[in-house]
Length: 257
Length: 269
Image (cartoon, rainbow over all chains, first blue to last red; front, side, top):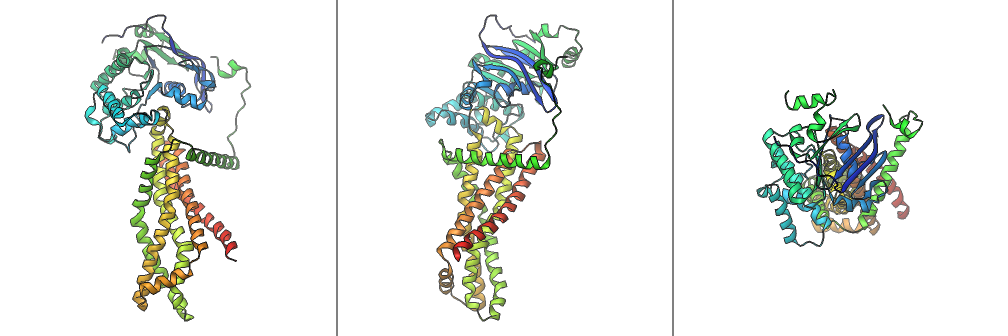
C-alpha cells in the first residue's frame, strides 16, 4: 500500500492545542496534550480504545469543554469564545460521527438540506437542491436521495454522514472512526473518499482511527496517543519504527506480523 | 508520571457525591433552566413553523382515534352511572347539565391530558432520548443548528396548542356518548339534550378548562422533552426517559388539577 506524502514544512496552523487536560470524574483522559494541524494535511490520531481520541475532537468542535489548556481553531481561542462565535466556527469545522448520526426520521435528501437551509436561509430551493446533488455526487450516492437512513448499508451511512458535513463547505474535517465496523472493501472506499475530500474540497482533517491501513492510506502525519499524551508524532514509518511495547502490538496486530 | 495536580500545584480533595436532597435541588434547578431556555427560544427568531405544524399533526391527529373512543365511552358510562343517584331524587332531567359540567370542568381536560401523557409524553421522551444516545442531537449541534429550538421548542409548543383543542374535542365526543345513553333510556331528543347542557355551562367553565388544558399540554411537552433531551446511558436511558416522561407527567397533571380546582373555585363563589 502506498503511503501518503508528508506534510510540507512551513504551512499555516489551522488547529493548535497546548497543554490540554480532560478528566471524567476521577479518570484522567487527556493529560497535557499538545498538537498542531496544518492547512491542507490529513493528520491521523491513533490510540487504544478509551484513550481520549474522540474526546479530543469533541473538544475541538465545542461538544465538550477542556478542564485546562488552550485550543485554537482557525485563530479562535475556544476558552474565550461566545456561543454565537462557536456557532459560526462550527460552520467551518465538519464532524463525521462514528455511527454516522443521520437523522432517522428524515430522508437522505432532508438530512443533507437540514444544516444548509438553517445556516443559509437566503438560498433558493433550486440552489439547495443543487448543493445536495453536488455533495451526493461527491460521495457517489446520488441515487439514495429519497431513501431513509434505515435503508442504507453501513458504508453508505458513513458516506452520507460525510456528505452532510461537506454541504457546509468546511475548512476542517474531523472524522471519528470512519472505517469502524465496515468490511475491508468498504474501508478502502472510505479511505479513498477521505483523500478525495482532501483534494476536492481542500480540507485539513483529523482522522481518529485504530485501523492502521486507513492511517497509512490517508495520513500525511500520524500522531499516537499514549497515556493521555501525544508521544509519537510523524510519518507512518517514523511512528512505528520503535521497540516501544505500547506501540509495537498495535502494528503487529494490524499487519499480522 | 506528571499528573494534573502536580502540574497546577492544586491540592486535590476527594469530592463526595451529592446527597439525595442536593441532587433533587440540582435537578429542579436544571428543570428551571430548561424551562427558561424554552421561553427564550420560543420567542426569538428564526421560527421552526414547518416543524411545529408537523408536531401538531403528530400529537393531535394521531391521538384522535384513542381520544374519540375513550371520550365517547366516558360520556356514556358516566351518564349511565349517574342516572340511579339522580333518579332517587326525581332529578334525571338534570342529567345533561351534570354530564356537561363534569365533562367540561374535569373529565375532558384530565382524560385528554392523561391519554396524551401516555401516548405523546412517552413518544417524545423515547424519540429525543434515542436521538441523544445515537448522537443525532450532537450532529445538529456541530452543524451550527440549534437542536433545542428544532426539537424541544416545537414539541412543547405543539403539545401546548394541541391539548386544549383535543380537550374540547373530547368533551364534545363525551357529550355524544351521553346523548346516546340518554336517548336510549329516555328518548330525549338531541336538541333538548344540548339545550339543557349548554344552559348550564358558564364562561368561567370554558376559561378554566382552557387554562387547565394549556397547563397540562405544556407539562406533557416539557417533561417529555426534558427527560428525552437529557437522557444518557444508551438504550437503558431511552427506556428510562420514556417511562419518566409518563410517570412524572401524570403525577404533575394530578397536582395541577388539584391546584387549579382550588384556584377556579375562588371565582365561582
